Image (cartoon, rainbow, N blue to C red):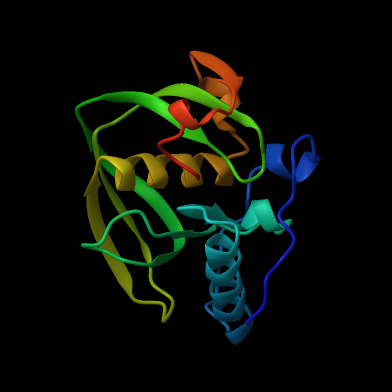
Length: 161
């Protein structure tokens, strides 16, 4: 496992659509493991493959104790419920946060590290992290959809995605 370099805005890779993973290989599994190590090293709660410069549909999220570390291949949101509004940050956009409106609860389907189909429902920060990371797979950054963007300060910090 290794810590990878996190790509920063305005790198073009952050604005492109990631490609579906067609086969779960040892390289895909290693990339997921490296992404988790990189996310933890940067003290984030989520990371998408484009953030390490790779246009593949892979995310890692660790946003609540109930679910712990989640590694997903080809994740997609299959249902949403409710609404939350609050601050987000991004490891690829250091120094900025933004107020973003998201679904309160989402259900996500994808493949786990072994290639088995999984469905996970999360609320609150986990739901926000899923939506944020899946947006990355579609070339969308929180700054593209935030109602307000501002410099990072401790009182605005609730999320370190």
